[in-house]
Length: 553
Image 1 (cartoon, helix red, strand yellow):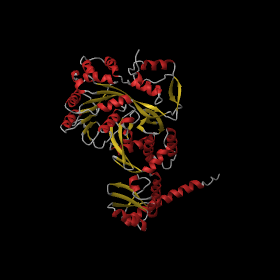
Image 2 (cartoon, one colour):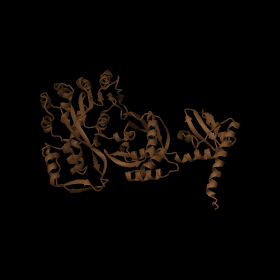
Image 3 (cartoon, one colour):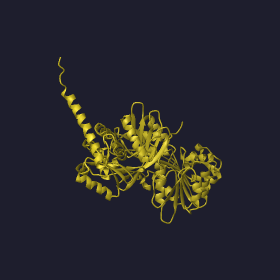
Image 4 (cartoon, one colour):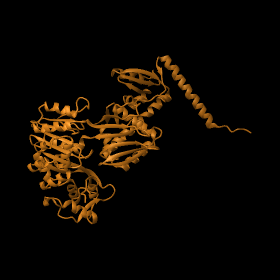
């Protein structure tokens, strides 16, 4: 029985033979011309090298710049006699590059030329620096303004199996994060997939799921940018890099920790725009704001703001510093780390070895400052030094981890501070939380009734200054649809030192006793501030009750 002739199979064999012959010819010619042979189908292409040569010129010269290390540049070409290739080598040499010439087959060069399709909007990348083209990023941000748009965009990108554009994914993720004003990007490997989540307005949102191969490409790129070790995956690593967009820089802080299925990656986005909040737009109630404006301009004293991580304490303190800054006062900060750079203010950073909060604060006092900001009071030594600074002609701003303003004083006592110094040193104790704001175009009013109304009435029943109460408790506001929130605003409470409170604190009262004592000052608690904001349509009661401690029975 005759076997039918398989034309396709024979054609494939002939094509394979021709490819081998072409590679053999390129290898022979490389020896003739004194160049090194290379096969660009198996050699990795350095995208920063590829960028040095415009695609049009590369196709004319049938040449590709495929690797770069400092001023050493590797260039592969199909024919050293091509006049465009000769001109190209001279052009690179005129730019002070040390050029290593390679020869490659036509197929090999064509394969490398296909990588131009993978060139993303990133202008370049090196450890610590990541430059994005402003106009293209702006266009991408417009397309990626919602999580749904982002998912569709990545689906289309990853469907391009030919080019497997993992080189572009990090830019796409960051562009989406910038567009949606995310504060953090989480990349979390699981057993069968890798989950990408964005923290939007303080809430983590599932954004995408991709495979392990894609994850490894992204993780390696992040490590390179952050200056981390590529071959280390069994211990935590921290780093940072900057995204340069049109001359302005956004700092990204990188954290990797080992997990059961790979390293968990978190990128903290420190966008300077996020702290460009004016004193009047923090969301502080007008009565409290007026009092704060007077108190923070005192020549000496201390303001402590409290709250959990991510409650906006740093933004509040930076806003206060910018508000009081004038050419005739010197402001010095000690932070861990410096999150945002403030013009006209001396900012220093701890190194956890020699320049600690305690030693740094003592050094700062020898720099003749008027105002000092201590990133956080963590131990007795820092607390005592800060108290002494406030007592000796300086105004000190700092943060403390407690649940509310009243808890500031028992916390300091726990750290070993003498309560008799509170009256002379501490001026203001604040607490704050952040809640999501209702989108003005996606909110609606609903009746306030049942248990919710009873709870609102209970919270507002202790408001000392009745002029602060809303005119009606009949209606409240809620989001109209799933995407009903846009941006965040602070809820605040503050305690101001006076003679009566100073004497009261000498008895080392409990947190609850302090809270009752300061009701007479007539300022709102965080819960009251939140409820009033909800009744006025700024946020929702659901948001308020999510972040503040409610009164106990």
